[in-house]
Image (cartoon, rainbow, N blue to C red; front, side, top):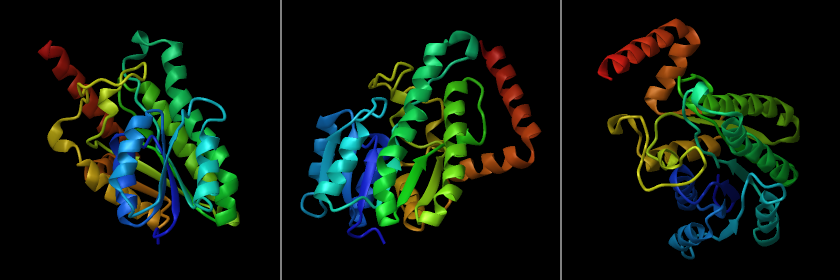
Length: 266
C-alpha cells in the first residue's frame, strides 16, 4: 500500500521518527525527512541509497511557515504528498509547583501547535491525494501521570484533535490515525525541559519495559498502512489505557502507593 507513496515525517532526525522513516523505506515509500538537525537528516537519507527517493528538509515546527517548505518539496520533487506524520515533540517534566508558565508554553508550542502547523501545511496536499494524516500522541494522552502535567496536557490535546479531524475530514477522503506509544526506546529522555538534547538518557521507565524502537516503528507503519483510527503501541500501554478507562481508581491507587514508596526511600 505504501509502495511508491510520498510520506512526510517530522521529527525524523532521531528516535521514533528516524525508525519510522527506516521502516517506511522498507515498504518502498518515498520520504520527506523534516527536522531541525540537517546533518542527521542527511545521514538518514544516505542510508536508503537508490532504494527510495528521499528529501531532507530542515524545518522547525515551532516556527510559522517552516513546515510548508517540506510540503512544497514533496509536491515539487515527489509529485504530491500521500501521508503526513506529525511526529515532532518532546517532554517537559516536573511538578507543577516547580515549573512556570514558560515551561507549559514551550511544551504546547512544539507538541500541540507544531502538530497544528503540520496539519495546516499538509492538508491541502492530502486532500488532493485523498491521503492520510498520522498524529503522534501517547499513552499519556489517555492516562495522566504525576510529574508530567505539561506533556500529559499536550498529548490529551492532540488526541482530541485527532478524534475531531478523523470525522471532519472523512468526507474528503483524508484518513486520520492517532498513534499512542507507551514506553519506547527513543531519544525523548535525552531532551531536557528547554528542548536541548543530551547524551545521557534520563528516561524514568525501566529498560525491560521499553519496546525496541524498530518494533514500535513496525507497528506504527502497519497502523498507517491500514488507516486505523488509533493504535496504542506496546502491550503495557494497551493495559494502562484499558485500566484507566474502566477502573481509574485502581491507577490512582497505584500512583499513591508508588509515591509513598519513593518518600520512604528518600
